[in-house]
Image (cartoon, one colour):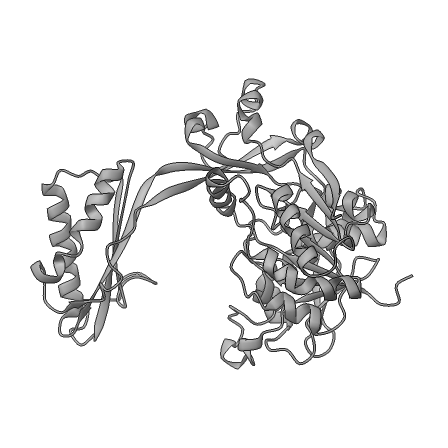
Length: 459
């Protein structure tokens, strides 16, 4: 029996997060699991485009050198890693990880579990033919309207396949698209032997996972709670969940690290990206966030108790990304005097030139950063004493040529528009494909039999 609570440390809150955070979690004190969350809704389409160009790609590439650095200590200390770094190619990620294990001198000492089956693109036409409309949750429109533009379609998996590979001895578990919170509560189910029908404990695990999934946002980063008093954000400590078999848990961080864990910082994360707090829906359970209570448990320690849950729904969420044209975004800075007036005139000149060229856009958006961008326009006319504003203007169109031409019309404003323009050193804006988000639901029995969980081992 474990003589201490189960310690699940958050190591990444998104793809591109602090790469030293997992190192601080492993080296800063004892932990049992390292959880790393890499996937946002749009990330799967980015990874799919990478895999289209290179079949060996499609996962979080920076995960591999990070693990090569950490694997000797992880193996030595018996730490287990659960992450969705596998993206759209968990097998490729696992193979690269095993190669890294060889370079790190731990060949044959690392079992890698992979979880697949979330990718619905190969089955989309079959599913639609069987009556699964995959209607947009927000608009009710059927997916067939944008079927030809679909780039990725991934169903959110729950904890069951992760628990399965942990039970088979995996030290590192790589998943594709799964519920973010499952990366934390799957280890709790495995270690404590929870039943999938124990909805209150599962709901507590969901809350723990939700608190853990965004990294330092729980421990003092990006917090509104007296943010100016948060110490040493340069070496901020990422959160650690200390879980107990009852479902109660403590949120904390390693002693001596920067940041802060308080009821305020934890509460902010609890309500982050939550719609109806009574129905936080995951693949495994519906958690009622209104039932939880936060209690002070000492310096940088907050205890979470009282979480209640209800059985899971008959549906799983599907995250679909589709191509919706092209966009470009450019900027110019205008200096005092009358900076806002100059910037607005530059915008008008640019719009007239685009219209004269006969270019058609789905959208043209402009804002003056420093005057009307963040909170809308200031009351009254802009003061002529504003030292500078940035004209930020973007266009969107299904016609790539129209967007290309827009990128060529911004630079001439430097000499053919209002005076005092600067800040164009970055050069011509880049044309980017627009990836739009299409959330949908599908009955779980249509996809769960296709989930796969298996072990890979290096030779």
